[in-house]
Every structure is written in C-alpha cells, then in structure tokens.
Length: 387
Ligand code: NAD
Ligand code: WQD
Image (cartoon, rainbow, N blue to C red; front, side, top):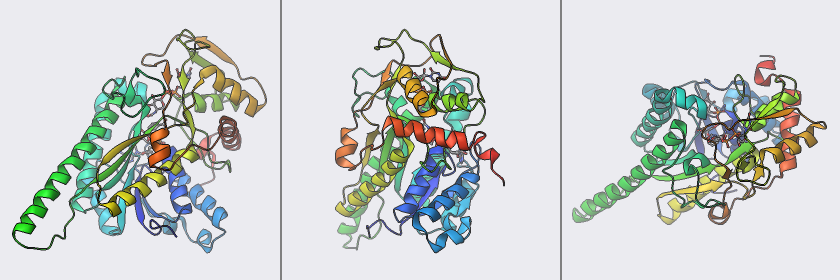
C-alpha cells in the first residue's frame, strides 16, 4: 500500500472532463475523494459513471453503496467562500486539493474577460485563502500549454517564457501560476521567521506554514475512458478539434472546418501534442506523490511540469487518425486561420518523465478509438442518460 493510500483529496471541477477521469484514477489508486463543482459545464451523471467504473474495476462491495458514499459531492461555486469553508469543515481529513474548476473557452474569454478573471482568478484566490485557513496547503493546479504563447523553441521546455499567452483565458493561467508560486515563496519566509522566533524563545516548533504546489501544464487532452461510458461532454458546439470531429462522426455536426493550411508546417495545418485523458489523469496521481515526497524530505516549493507526449500531430494527421477509428472519411473544409492559434505546441515532457515518474503511455490510435467508442455510445453526451 502506497503512503498516499487513504489520503483524502478535494477535487474542484471533479465532474468535468479531466476532473471525472482523475477522480476515477484517484479512487483506483487508493485515495479517497471529495468533489466540489458548480455544474456550470458538467453533469452529476459523470460521478455516477465514475462510481460504476470503480465498481467494475474493483468488483467491490463499494459498488453497491450509493454514489455519495464513495464520492462526497458539494455543488458549490469556488467564488462562494462560506460554501468552501463548509466543505473543509465537513471533511477535516482533506490533505490536498487538485484544482480543475474554472472556465476554459479561449474564444469566449476574449468576449467576456471579466467573467474569466473573476471565476479563474478570484475563484482560485478564494479557494487558496480557504485552504490556508484550514491548513491544507498542498495543491495541484491545472495550467495549460497556452501559457507558452508562441514559443521560441519546439519541443517546449518548462523554462520557456510564459508571459506571451494569447488570450484572457491563457493569461488567467499565467497569473495563477505566479500567484501560487508567490504563495509558496511567502510561506517559506513565514515559516523561517516562525522557526527563528520559536528557537529564540526556546519553544517547540509545531505549526507548519509551508505551501507546496505542482503546476501541471497540459498540452491537448483528448480521448475518453476505454470503457466508452465516460468522456468529454461539451455544452453546445465544441471549440476543440477532437470533440468537434466526434460530433461530425455521429451526425450532430455537418463537417469540420480546418482553421488554416498556410502555417509553416509540413502540411500547412497547426501541430499539437494530443494526450490521452487517462494518461493525463495519472499525471495528477504522480503530482500528488511528488507533493508527498517533498513533504517527507522537507523540501517545499512550487514547480511546473509539462504533461504531453513529446510528439506533435497536425490537424490533418488527426483527421486521418480519427477517420481510421470511425472507419470512414469525415467531411472537412479548409477555411481561414483562427485568431490566436500558433503553428506548433509540442511538449518536452522529460522533466515530468524524470521527476514525476510519469509518461504518456497511450497511442494516438487508442485515443481516437476511445473517443469514438464514447461518442458513438453517447451521441448526446450525459444528457442522453436516463436520470
Ligand atoms: P471542464 O469544463 O470539463 O471542467 C471544469 C469543471 O469546473 C466543470 O465541471 C465546471 O462545471 C466546473 N466549474 C466551472 N466554474 C466553476 C466554479 N466557479 N465553481 C465550481 N466549479 C466550476 O474542463 P476540463 O477540460 O476538464 O478542464 C479542467 C481544467 O483544466 C480547467 O482548469 C482548464 O482550464 C484546464 N485545462 C484544460 C485543457 C483542455 O483542453 N481540456 C487544457 C489545459 C488546461
Ligand atoms: C487544435 C488545432 C486549431 C477546431 C486549446 C486551448 C488550450 C487548451 C486546449 C485549455 C488547432 C484546429 C480546432 C476546429 C480546427 N485548453 N481546429 N478546427 O487551440 O490547441 O488549445 O485547447 O486550456 O489552452 O488553447 O486546441 O482543439 O481548439 O485546436 O482546425 O474546429 O485544431 O486551429 O490548430 P488548441 P483545439
């Protein structure tokens, strides 16, 4: 049994696409979870599916118990301070937070930037304040490859500048990385001062001020759980390539528009590093283990890691790969560039491979096959489920 077993992790945004896959992975690896989500971009049905999958994977008696027993759930907004306090009061055993909750549509963030700054920044600051109040000072934060803007070097190492993000959404991630880092730095100074004062007074040092954080910069998450019963369920017309293609395949949308074929790449379309969502979920378990190791060694801090495969594929590559999974050619048309897109975002994942002991394992074909299994079986996402 790993030292992490039985720890309780608060997962904000745990009903969402990446959150739900991570909740399942946490349960499968022996953690307990508490979920906070305001359901603004998700459905409670996702947690019912997690419950089913956990039951199938363990064959355990737990599967017969209610969803709420396995996954305590709070429909709370991260801006709601009293609501968050209630969560920590009810679950004093929470030892760390994985923070997914927030708004994520790049285009929309340009139209309503204040909403993005409010939810992503004020909401996260609120969460951090409540965590501090309850002495839960370990966080894994969902950052994004978008923080790199248009990077000078491919594959992108973590030390690439993160000042050039192209959208208000991206800037929320840049600011939040700085905020979390500042908090970790300040807490070390506070702890040093506290230890000094206690030593001078010959008192025992018992309180721990120190924050530690792992910032995970995801590249392009795609795919679904291999069971086909859990996946991405975007509201309205998807903004992202793979869910859009999946909706074309089930006939909800007519054809894909490819945004530009005049980029400086082999086929002229943009290159991205697509990463299976189940691999990404495992990256969060790896990050929690890293926080444990740091705590054990007394080396607190804040460190960013790229979560990607290290291999880039163009939009045309992705269409071909998904066509193969579906077994027919999906219609697409080339149109003009989408503002804000950059030619290539491919990760250098070696730091995460080395320090988090994490590596993306799943292939592009698995990603496409799993996405297709999910979309074929759930053409209307979770809203098609009997409630
Ligand atoms: P998602 O929208 O599926 O999940 C986010 C969840 O947060 C949803 O369940 C939503 O209901 C909830 N939420 C939103 N605002 C909230 C609020 N104010 N209070 C409480 N809950 C709230 O998105 P996802 O794809 O799972 O992304 C999770 C995180 O990862 C986000 O922070 C996103 O910015 C980041 N990220 C996503 C991608 C991607 O391509 N999916 C890439 C990089 C980073
Ligand atoms: C991939 C490629 C498009 C849709 C975004 C965010 C990033 C992260 C992941 C949250 C690009 C092309 C897309 C379509 C297309 N999310 N495309 N037709 O833009 O790399 O990253 O999602 O953090 O922050 O910026 O992902 O899936 O939107 O696009 O041709 O209908 O597909 O131009 O080249 P992107 P994407």
